[in-house]
Length: 563
Image 1 (cartoon, rainbow, N blue to C red):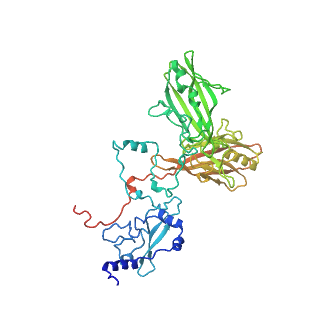
Image 2: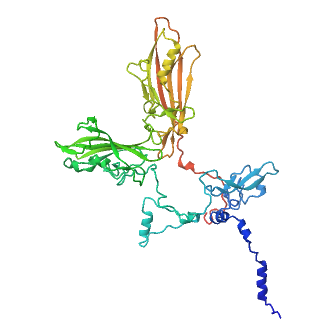
Image 3: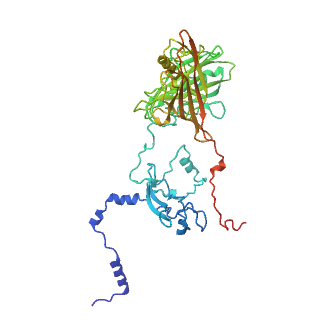
């Protein structure tokens, strides 16, 4: 006889009937394992901001803003009076690789005109974008940990160094793979990193607070520096002052790459000896190490200057290091001396080219110039220091004798030079015109000028082409009589520290008509070259103009309860 079923049994039966059937093994296998893992690990959270409800031009409370197509207070009648959408696209975080975007527009062909709203998926074209906002700590402001006597040592150990890691463990998508111990250590020098030696770093003494030398200044990789400072000396103890000895600057080998065992010894490139009266003599041999010593109440062989030259590869490895010394004599009356230090870097298999600024041009330094052969980068001019040059005036003022004499164009300096040409009846027009053109422009007039003082030859876009113009008359014989170069430059970057940048260069050749002279007659014509620098920087606007003004009518209760 069957037992009677209570109400609880019916409730359990209903739950069993309503529950979904379990998945079969083949259905579980149909979903790839990597898809399930990707959905679990890399799934991005829901967007924080709903762009459909976001409206940046909604300024009035409970009123329709003119031409604000996303204003929820506007009615279709209001939209029909709009002329345009002041904010056509509304997006959330612009750093995301993919996100929703609300697009607003007006259909002016409709009668009456109406607003069109679309919600689209917008893709960020930048390669530096955020794929998924899986760092939850960035979605809210975390209160900083306050140092206390209990946690001070822990915070000092974590944040007291020159650098520290702030990334949480939750950033690692694959927690099973651990980073090797040397994963974060660089295997090459990068710009600005201290040049390491076997004991510490390469010293480049410099003044810190006062003009006195401090030996704690490290030389930075690829950072060309030149310093001068004052060193306290005593002639009686000069042989025991380390900073006066050559060994102090070359006794430590340089590491080829950071944290490596490969060493590069510093060789002595040259030694110049300076007498008490300032006369300098270059020694024929630099193999002998000269140490400071006291002789006839003088301290001789004291280091007055050191010039380091570092050669590196294109991968950031130091392969050679040399030092050029200036040694001098110090009289017993001297209580201090001035020392000068300099360091420069050169990539192997390249010729060092002096810069004219870093990055902007420095007034008084040469304007750098070059050529661009088809299909290659900039080849800098073959003249001294790859400069833009003009005709150099001579004492004789003879143009034919001045051929080949050039003067560099110095940034910011307006210049003019010239010579005189004696023309006789026997001179032919075409050879004379070509000779004068060579006098004005030189043997190889450049095609490009560096826009910055430190523009590299491989960066073609950092070079400005020289526009060449010719002003001539209609006559059978024309000879060039003047070359005018106009350099237009602007202040680039911050107003606090603007950098001079060349934006345009124009070279204008002016010709004159040469009339046939009677036999036995002569004529003297002046030939001139000039350079003019023009500042085309826009004047700085007052700071109050930087704030936009909004011409709107405030609601009547905006200042409530104040009047």
